[in-house]
Length: 170
Image (tube, rainbow, N blue to C red; front, top):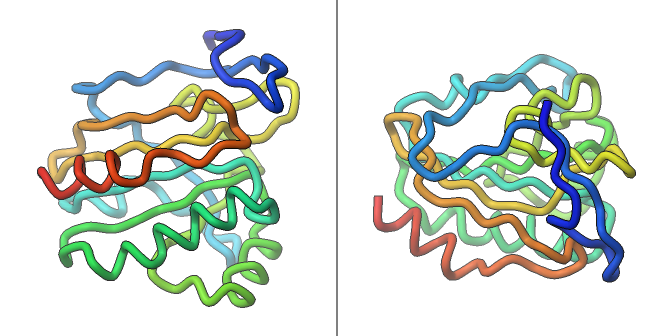
């Protein structure tokens, strides 16, 4: 498993991303995460759909909450062939509680806490914190990665407009 230092930062302090680095044009690696009821869920369950895949360090932080709520609002504006997934290392129970409190219903929220399978396969596992880096990946209906945005300073929001443009171009 590869390691990349000084790729992302937290409050200006460098962090190490661990895992395989995926690139635009790659076949999106399948992974297994947990749904809020602890059932396993694979990316391949959304085969044939366009996927907006976001990763956040923790839903219980301001930027992650803002980001997930923004994509929840945008999800209803996307066509029926598009799904939005958000993955964090929060426990599934905490995710369910947060989604209920925030009214998040149009984004599928999953946990990578158990095996960090997504984090390793997409190179988004922050070694020092065992959290995920902030990123957006757009995958086309054929399962090919068409857009990637890794937010350098994890306390910053992503460029929502660029990511949404990318999915609308598919």
